Image (cartoon, rainbow, N blue to C red; front, side, top):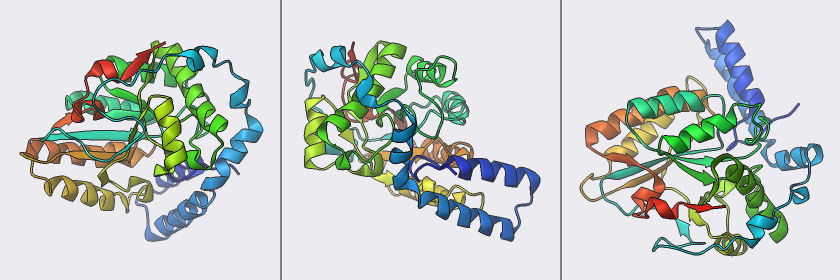
Length: 304
């Protein structure tokens, strides 16, 4: 059996959920209990995923990163590089962010955001969830990423395979970043200057690497905890966490930087819709991370 980490979304968990709920639309308590047990079992395997993929895939060190290695990475603007950032700076803004995609539900999310005239930031992974590489034109991901970019959403890095960067060597850490850059440069002609470390783990050595590569390191101040609430009887907990978090902030003086995952169907269909309703009622403006930090859009990417 293969599974992926909790933050990256478990493939078997998702497919199991879809099959079970299709055949049992009422979703009895016994079924939900079984699903919860399955979810816990799958998430326990999270740390094994980089090892599984390392054995199956071409080594990230085998790619030619010469152009990226030689790229001049100027540190432009006032937003700091290689320093953890948890908060927005512009009052009245909320930066919706989504990790681990694109995935099967990302198109639906883009449709919802478009209808709400809302912007978001997508922290992209290159080849997790057994979805195949994002720069494979035979797969749907390349065009989804192009749509994100075309519609004004911000695209940022979440590494290629979603490893714990703090546990990697310097060269492996750089290769995780370079491989995603290579893919995005092929798709968009640019690479991002923003990233979020998987598992929210990037200490001094990792931060030094990110600064050397010219990355802003983005965390969050509103965790929707959606990866722990993927089932129909659980998602309401994340809705409560998120909506109460938004309600608690004064739109005149405060701002919000949230985290969710577009690899979970109920995050898209339930959680995001509920958040947008409260955002609209409270009068917040949905923006990209760069915008909420007051960073000009010309600083969000580097041309390659």
